[in-house]
Length: 74
Image (cartoon, rainbow, N blue to C red):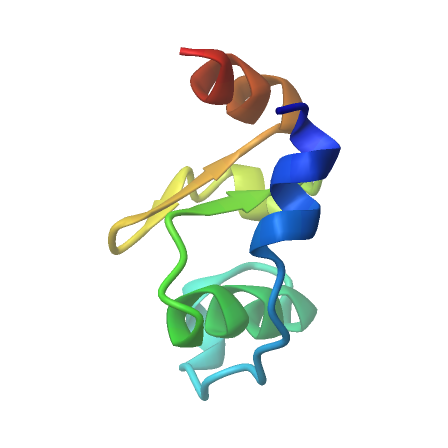
C-alpha cells in the first residue's frame, strides 16, 4: 500500500482537545496538538518549525513528512 492509500484508509475527523496554550511557541499550533491528543495519535506530520522544535508531546512524535515516510517504510 502506498502512503496515500494508508491515509485514505485511516483518516477520521477529530475535534481538538483543550490544552494549555503555553505548550508551544505558536498558540495556533495548540489546536493541532490537541487534535492529535484527542485522536490518540502516534504522530504529527508537519513542516512547521514551531511544532518540529517540540519533537514530541507526551507519546506523540512530531516529525517531517520525510521522517514519517522513513518510519513508514520499515
